[in-house]
Amino acid sequence: MISVESAIIGLFSFSIVLLVLSFFKKDKYKELENQVENLTMIVMQENYQLKKKMKVLEEELLGNESYTVPLNERYETNGK
Image (cartoon, rainbow, N blue to C red; front, side, top):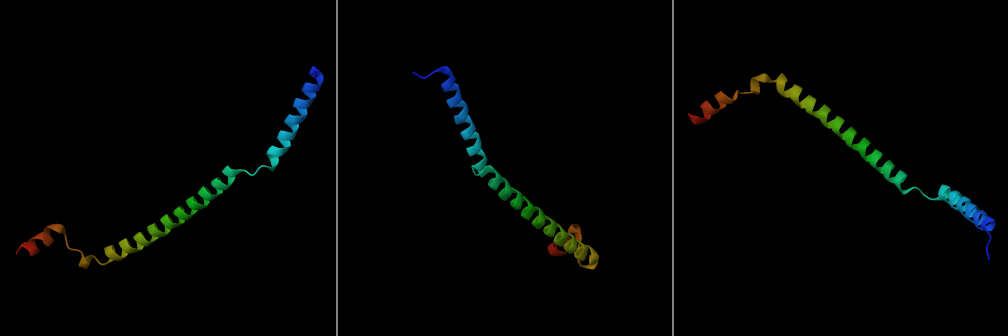
């Protein structure tokens, strides 16, 4: 029959083995976190580039105000 002392020693040694194995286990969530972080950076860079392009386009359109026609004049000339 197993004594209480040997059962405690066995459980303690088993817990130490599990603790050591947990350090060598590959962390799945860390890889997923890295992928999400990379994707976030890519989206932020694309968003920044799109905003820059939109700003350039807006400046070009606003710089050439002679080509813009107000909506009320546009409808009057099309209706006549």
